Length: 123
Image (tube, rainbow, N blue to C red; front, top):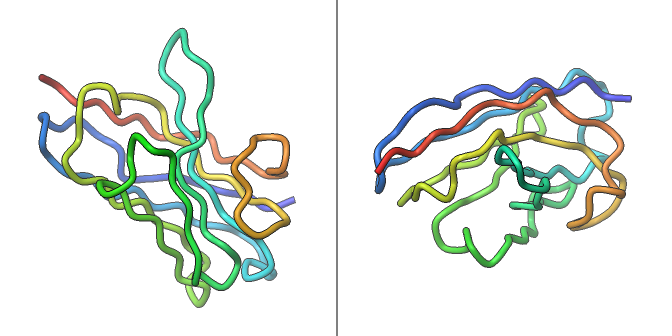
């Protein structure tokens, strides 16, 4: 449906910051809700954050609320995840995804997925 490409992952120390970006190849970006998910080896993929199509509403999983911020730029077809105060338990492959809806938090509602970018937090 829509091609998504993540970037910005890397290796940081506990307490550090990273900003992830996702570029969308579509001419209808503003109709999608966007989300970030993450998956660590041996664990299930989990919801991290979502933003509604116009960018006015957001939702987060409890473990990242206050540390992570999702945003979007509909003029540039991008969505970002600013990650501050990183912890080792944040280590995972992070995926961006697109959905029809408002603030979807379940994987089933997302129609398109990026390939992921690795985030590693050392302690």
